[in-house]
Amino acid sequence: MTNIVLLAGNIGNNPETVTTRGGTKITDFRLATSRPKRVDGKVVKGEDGFAEHDTEWHRIKCFSGLAETVQKHVVKGMKVAVRGRIHYTRWTDNENIERFSTEIVADAIDFLAWPKRDGDPQSEDADNIPF
Image (tube, rainbow, N blue to C red):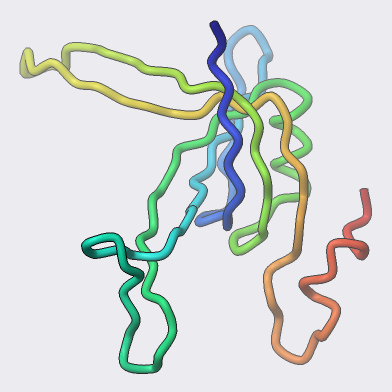
């Protein structure tokens, strides 16, 4: 039995890092993944003739050295591949309502491409990432 997740998508926000009392760094960000929208098994196309997409958002959490690397090098709009595991949390809030949360705890992140920048034809070239 195993719990393995592999996601490839676009970073939706600049990462946020906190440090625990014990000194562990934790970095969070959101990742968007998309797939073609389907109705009755057929891909839905827009007025422009291109496929429409459904987008899902994933909460990604990184710890320690990976957290530091992500904080230093990841920016909104970047394309990354995340390998990790699904983590579920359940708690009762102050109003005694049971809450649930799902996140991906990352084990590794591969940097695929920088976000597009106006006038920079190399901005999506993964070979230009300095690590």
